Amino acid sequence: MSQNPTEGFDPNDPIGTWRTIRDANLDAWAKGMTALVNTEVFANAIGLQLDTLLAASAPIQKAVQQYMETYLAQINMPSRAEVVTLAARLTNIELRLDDMQAQLDELLDAVRGLALAESPNGAAAPDEPAAPKTRRVRKPAAES
Amino acid sequence: MTTESPPTLDVEKLTQNLYAEMERLGKSTDMYARIAANRVNIQIGLTPKEAIWTLNKMTLYRFFPQTPPEQRKPVPLLLVFALINRPDIYDLRPGNSFVEYMVRQGYDVYMLDWGRPGLEDAGYDFEDFSLKFLPRAVRAMQRHTGKREFSMCGWCIGATITAIYAAMRPDDGLRNLILLTAPLDFSDKNAGPFNKWLNTDYFNVDELVRQYGNVPGEIIDYGNKMLKPVENWVLNYLKLWDNLDNKAVVDSWLAMNTWVTDGVRFPGAAYRQWIVEFFRENKLIEGKLQMEGRTVDLKNIKASVLNVIADKDHIVPNCQSTTAMDVFGSKDKLLLEMKGGHIGLMVGSGASKRTWPQIDAWLAKRSQ
Image (tube, rainbow over all chains, first blue to last red; front, side):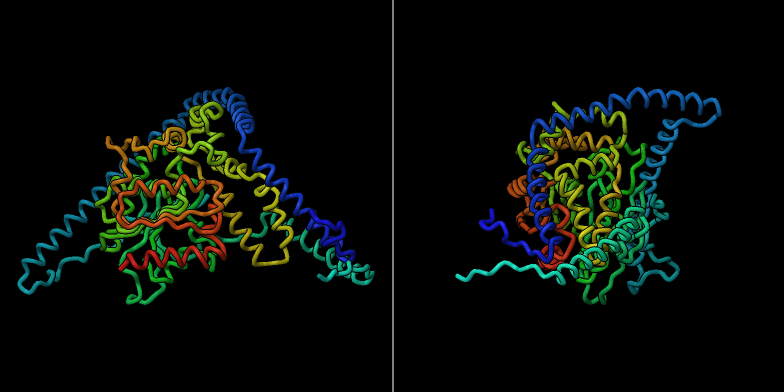
């Protein structure tokens, strides 16, 4: 603590002095709050807050879900669960395609290696296409 | 000892100061209102790159080289970020970008973007990210470079994912592994508030995941900010207010704010596993984590390891990273403690002067 209450105080710059006092107070507040959040009491409070939120939203979510499923079925549209299942299947297909592409690349490399070894001058056959450097790529999904 | 006399009141000087402050206040209010109304935009992740591979929501980028071929390092570098937030933090702003720095040092830099998971991705866990998706991205990079050996850098949860990959696939060509603020060991239950908040007595992870499917980025962001509430919700905006006439500070603030507020949903199964098997049960470091029917044993890591920690990291306390040094099986491993916080370690002037050159120095020797 300062011995002299006027230390650091410039009567010609009251805003600067106010900033210094503000920063010191905020610093103390920040330290206090950081200590507070690291307590069991706070952990309990934040857990209760989340539990309350989840308990309140669960019945609403369930009601909306049931209503939407019924409504979508009535207008012959797929439900969210069905779309999600379809999307998951597409991902699995994409995974298999990726693996097949990799295996194909390996096979092509092996064939090219064999062709290179068997050619009399060690050069690749002239009609053989070069290995693709870049693999199958689609445009990344647009940022939302 | 000399005693300075206190300054005396000078009405003219006081008037000048007050007038200047009023003028600044007017300009600041206008600028603050424009920022609050989202009328001042800033783009991040601007280093030129191309997408070379995609799978589901994931994209593998390659940054265009900026050095002559003879100056390039022969071992490519793959950057992997956490499942929360976007990987653009590796490439925040021109002049404040780890990617830009490494590309200029001659590295062939690739970056894996996990994308934004949809509900159909809620079932993916760490096994999927570490052993199903990451190896495929690595395969695509190896194909693209035509080289088998590579270096990999994981940050935060991305470091956990890369460590699991390195342990489970030690013969896939990984030569160097850089871990940035890696959460690996959760044995110290007093290390940081997360250990208390996520305790089974207080936090119902199952209900959260059941209701949301994927945990919203806003909830993750709220949790991270709550670790230092005054800094994040008061001082952060005050810093902007006090520096609204400083374009460099405003741009930097906007860039960071753009990144922080661009949260990504945490896939439900991975989130549940993160809380239960990592935080609560500490299975990884204790050698009890099972994936693909095998135990994930960090002793199996063969690659050279650079484990970078930040001395003021309040999100991943140092003890969650340091103790893993004894577990890594690598013969060549180094723990590097840098100044900074969880993100500040790799972003800002301190990062460009301290962290990046140290990473480059370590990696350059091992990329020949």
